[in-house]
Image 1: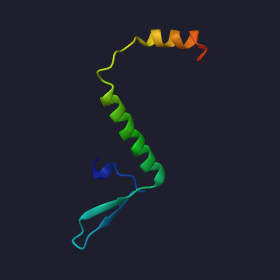
Image 2: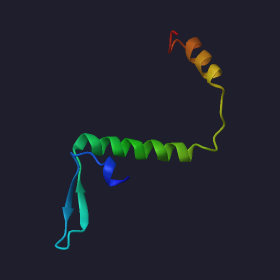
Image 3: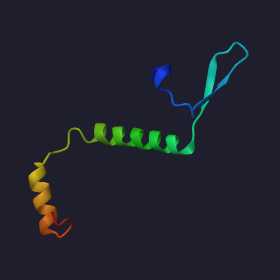
Image 4: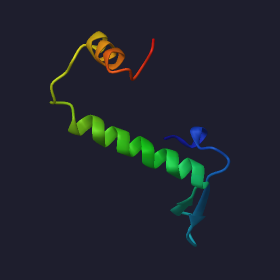
Length: 69
């Protein structure tokens, strides 16, 4: 992440030499970051699992009454 994309709501703790040593995030942004990290981990862990065509999944969900589209 470059400095230009850091939201204004993010704050940094700096040491005596002006080096960033910690970050303060609004709780919502922190929770979004945790969710993104979790989803990335799930994607990596499941990359070698068997796949099914999307149309097959949709049809199975329709048959089970889980969706009505």
